[in-house]
Structures are given as C-alpha cells and as structure tokens.
Image (cartoon, one colour):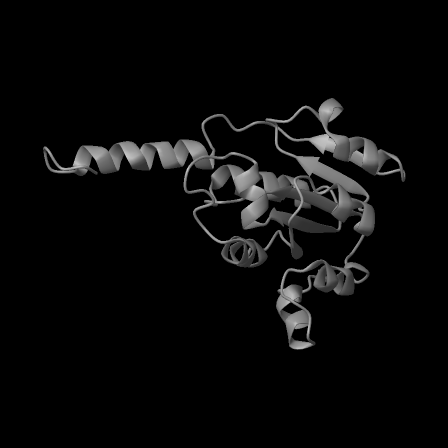
Length: 179
C-alpha cells in the first residue's frame, strides 16, 4: 500500500498550512487511483463515520476526506455550540485512521470548489443524501467521475450522540440545579 502517512503534516514541514488546499495539492498526485473523495463535518467521530470511510476507501486506491471548517460547519446549522471540536482537531483524528490517505479543510458551504480543483474519480456521500440533488454529483460527472451514496446507518449521527449526552447530563444534575 502506498499510503502517505499524515501528508498534511509533512507538507507543513515544507511551509504549507496543515490540511490546506496547498498541502492537499502537493500530496494529490502521489495518491493511488482511483481517488475517492468524501466530505463532512465529522464532529464526533462514531461507528457510522468509520463504516462509511471504510466502504468509501474500498471503492478506490486512496481516500481523501474534506472537512468543513468551523465557520462552514456553523453555517450548516448543526445546532448550538457546534462544532464541538475544531476543524484542526477533527482533521487530525481523521488523518490518523488507516482508511484515510489525505485530509483537507474547506471553508465553503459545499466542497464544489475543492472538487473542481482536485477532480477525483469517485465522490461518495452517506445515505442521508440524495445523489440526484447534490450539485457535487453533477460536477464530478462533468469530468467523467462518478458519485455514489452509500447506505444510511440509522441512529448513528453526531446529533443523536449529542442529544443522548445532554439527556444523561440533565438526568445526572442534582435536583433543582441547572445542568
């Protein structure tokens, strides 16, 4: 396997900002094809994320994960106080996973600009999306790539986890005390 271990960190040693488009471009040409691309907030990494990443990686020679910046994640309206983790922390955790070959942070509302710059052969999203409604799918198809939606994992979401933690925290608060 020709995995590039934590390539964004290596690019940082050469003066690039970790997880930046510049760092991604430096590593992109070295990635085995077909290059699979996915994106998301990945706020609290959970089994659903890991299964999606594993299935996505199996579709090609390498997997690139684009992470919404903190500002981009807030614009998605995920909820108060979100994201819980900074973009750098979320990207660092993803970069440590064996299925992930490259991580890049993007600040736009969609990864279309990043996709157009890198031009992956395969674009993947989780099953809570409709591929026909994704502007990314049409963009990837414009250069002969393909877009896929992988199966949905019911009950496995950062929002569901955050809701369970909030309920547990409120239940653990002493009577009369605000949790």
